[in-house]
Image (cartoon, rainbow, N blue to C red; front, side, top):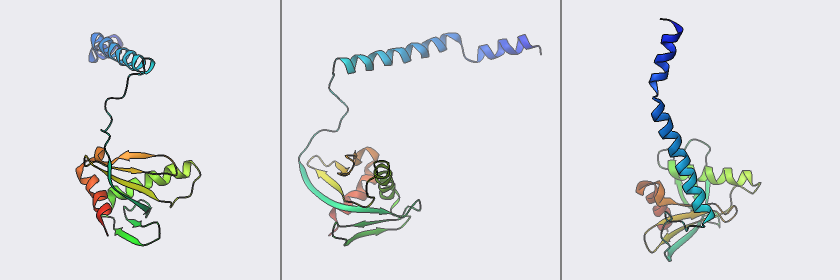
Length: 153
């Protein structure tokens, strides 16, 4: 096979019309986002606001990458100790919080706030860094792990 035959076969793998369509799509998305930012269009894909029905302050201490995590009250009482098979998602959230605190040069083991709202949604907030997450965005199973911690005596 000659070089010209190989070159023409490579050009046919991605049709020119498809490349143009993809480029047009990217430009359209950029135009829409630019318009939304300039026109200050309100956010529409945010969780609905609801009153707080229950909240608890806790300290999450991750055991590195193993998946184990200890959950303590601000006074140091043990709320739960989750091993590697139980604490995967909770430990993952703890590692995110630890990383954000390390980047901001803040102490690692300060309390976070887990909140249940009237509409059933759960969220977690780190007052030290301002980071927060709607736990329902990670699926019902993962959110239920924090719901159990919220309900622990």
